[in-house]
Image 1 (cartoon, rainbow, N blue to C red):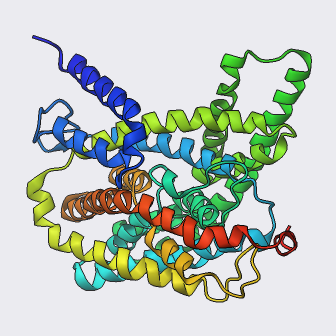
Image 2 (tube, rainbow, N blue to C red):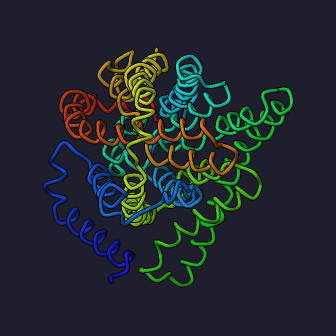
Amino acid sequence: MVDIYIIDLLVIGLLLLGVTLGSGWISRLPLSFALIYLVVGIFLGPYGLGLIQLRRDEVFNAEFLERLTEFVVIISVFSCGLKIVMPLNLAVWDITVRLIGFLMPISIFGLAAVGKLFLGMDWGAAILLGAILAPTDPVLASEVQLTDKNDKDELRFGLTSEGGLNDALAFPFVYFGLYALKDNNWDNWFKQWVMVDLIWAIASAIVMGIIVAKAVVWIDKRIQKRRSVDELMEDFIAIGAILLTYSLTEIVNGYGFLAVFVAGLVVQQSYRNPEIPLGQLEFLEQMEKLLEVGTILLLGSILLWPPMLKYAPQSLLVIVLLFFVIRPLGVWISTIGKRPVGSSRRSLNSGTRWLFGWFGIRGVGSLYYLGYAFGHGLKGEVGEQIAWITYTTIVVSVIVHGISATPLMNWYERNIANQIKSTPAATINEFK
């Protein structure tokens, strides 16, 4: 009898070969690679061949899911930082400040209100649900993110920077929800949450991201002057920087995701030769795509019809309100008075605002926070409720955003982006 592990390798090898050789055709179709991985994952799960079983006898290996998605996210947020070549000034980063400072809290508390008012949750569980589903995904959103060093499109920049930051900055609200689940008396832990989980963890992450990245770049430059690193090994400098930044930040109780994103920005800004971070980016994107395959395959394999159907009405309510009300309305509120960079317009194009509202793609970040919550107190009926709402939301996001991304971005390039590119350079330069 052939070992199931060997069959798993065979199927995954065929999948990788198929999507790679067929990528030229697939990229022209209104679907994403993630959707293909999801379907294959379902086929490999309990309703298909049963080759991947993260759930066995009602026991769910949440720790494995947490660790896998954790590694995927830190690779992805560092990549987001490397992609951004924009100058570090408020005029350029205004859209990011709005998406993080206004939109993310609106999304969290909007979802929390849905959980409290319509799903029968207490405030702790409702805020936890909002925090888990608030982050947009930096892994599955490559279609709508920055494409190269010359890409300065504000929509793509906003979605890239948002995906890199809100995967980290949802963490304080996850902690808030977990604390509230364990203790309804907020007075017992609220001050500690503000001082440690909000102020210290964010501030230390920013500092560590800068210090570790600067140190790695300084050492790299010094050594390269004396003896060049082997070209085959050079890209591993990025992996080393990621792991050092993340681990050292976690040791001092900072948010590792935020530190890694900051480190990516610092590395991008620190090399005079832009080919060095770009080479690292190409390597990391290849690794990211491989990890995406594994993560979405696992997601497909853990889907079970009975609990999905049990929570389907609640999931559908959350999905409809999040995708069509909370996110679009939150974007509209957050971008009031936003003047587009590189344009003489006094307000952001309405089409751009609607696309910001639509491309709130949910994915690996939400899976990580769910796995983390399971390992830190989330359990029982409320745990199952939050889990299956989260799984279903991610599945629907993979489908609808995967199908709509290509045609909508093509429409955006033709009708909005090209008009901005034709703006006189003098208008653009005023923001530099």
